[in-house]
Image (cartoon, rainbow, N blue to C red; front, side):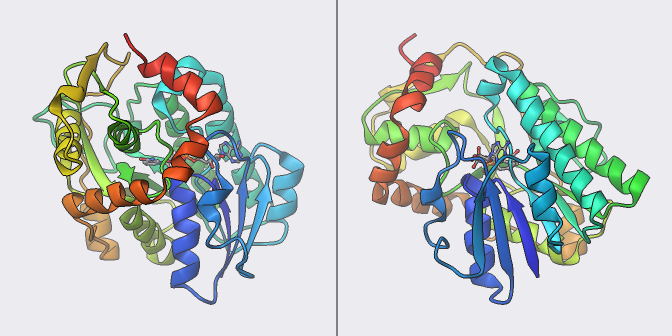
Length: 336
Ligand SMILES: NC(=O)c1ccc[n+]([C@@H]2O[C@H](COP(=O)([O-])OP(=O)(O)OC[C@H]3O[C@@H](n4cnc5c(N)ncnc54)[C@H](O)[C@@H]3O)[C@@H](O)[C@H]2O)c1
């Protein structure tokens, strides 16, 4: 099987490419990434010399480039490429609409033109909006109610992808996953941000009261779920993917502090994010029953492995926590 994978130098894309090539020794991947602040070729170092992997530096909105890559008739396009940080979407919504929605459109158009046998759009539980503490978990039929420009731009791409299935019969599948953690995650997201801060004895900024709940899944489990959808999922379908581990942000901070032997006094409450969703929770019975996929990595052990990974990759961390990241970090979470 030949795959065209976008967003391959980011957190989930790089784990997916590396893991997929190791799992399927007769598959090959062309991977496309614009190398924005979040894209890092270091993340792909294990596969850069693999003859079954070819990296292309480019933009999913670049029609001639996308047309050229898709004209080579890959068996599937998997679209991970995105602007992915909610806080940044509040500051720069246009970038999010442009990459997440128009970028997905550009890929879908090429898939339609060249009759590509499969298109997997990687999406998020955030498209469903917010739950109360007592609401039932999101199913694939939950009404979309995104709260941030990030989740709205992803919801638009999901709807467009499904419309291509209904209108043009483009064989599209959509996956919606909960919060990922694991190696290679850019340290603006809560778990690597907190690990990095604890390594440097810096405060952990917690929005509002810290009671916001997220469902956590290890990135390897997410990658395996995508393979299950790729190999056995049905076209025109949406599949929820979750880790079955609901945690308040404050609990995540407490866990990290405990495992890393740091002081609880490092917790620092800051003013809440506008439009901050209270709770996400996933009903994954569809993928469990239909594709027999279940998450394998327990949050507690996955978190310990993740902390170890960041401790063993301090140069990786240092390289990306300079420059523009530093400025953004200070603006968002600096002393206030
Ligand atoms: N991180 C999560 O917890 C999570 C959960 C569910 C779904 N998702 C989805 O998974 C996908 C990957 O998320 P991530 O956390 O790895 O994000 P990330 O920010 O780490 O990586 C995104 C990658 O996309 C690339 N990119 C950005 N704009 C591009 C463009 N115009 N053309 C080509 N490449 C471009 C970046 O360079 C980067 O390598 C996204 O679609 C995201 O919405 C993420």
